[in-house]
Image (cartoon, rainbow, N blue to C red; front, side, top):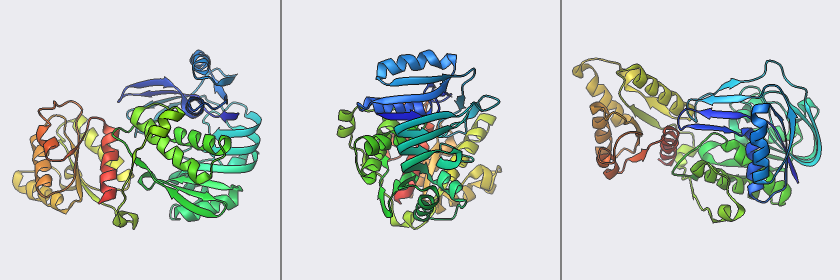
Length: 402
């Protein structure tokens, strides 16, 4: 049996529309149960979530051990890449105390869990101040850390170290046998008792990001602690399972996961060597809604490692004589172009055509335009996406391959 300990939270997303009760631990319990694993879920749960989780436990086939509380936690997202607004209790609840053989522990917002076990997988799940596994008195004879690069840098106290260096430091300071650091398009680095290896990330046609980290941790924990696979093999399975989740928003059975063969991301040597591609951000900026979209895309693309040339920010408004040549030079200088296509703004369509004439890769985000109106872009080998988060990831993947 695997004991999953962590948050069960309500999740709401404006676009794409999503209203569910999962959280890291709730999602992990479902993911492991779908594989046929025996799971016991421990979490704080309020009355609003209790009936949902009781029904899900029966449906999925896991055991729910609920610590009832007056108020749970809820996340409100604008989209899958946005920073959520978090509704949480005013004061933390008393810690959970768990003594089991195999435990998957997630960091929690409303409290913490003190673990005493033989095997543990720990995902800190904290974008601000991730807690070390043993900081609250938790103990494990065999510990695996699963975290993203930002969490690793916070726990190491440095943003300039390489993933290899951070993994070795975390293994030493945390007493971990295994450290898995997720690195975006570079896949995941696996430290296993001194040995270093990597597993790839995979391309999908759709990207549903909320809960993808929970899915990775769940599949890694099951493959390593329950099935006895090597850390490298467990991380490779977890990466594929995460791609399945991002593609479908669902959790695979063993058979469906074995049949799922996504394409590994191609990463160029230039990108691996640290080159930051320059992106041209095309889109109208004549209303508050349009300006918000341009600003949001600029922030998200820069946050994922790209340099961004934005006509609004880097050239500004002006007459044709003032701005056109500067904008066109921006396209000539860029490596690829991201276009906000809804509304079929004439300037944006012109910029797309100019970029394609120069054989620059183009990703066009358009939710509301007809197939007929997108025909020229599709026929000229632009990558089209009707979901914002998918469009951003498609852009980053295209940049990484250049």
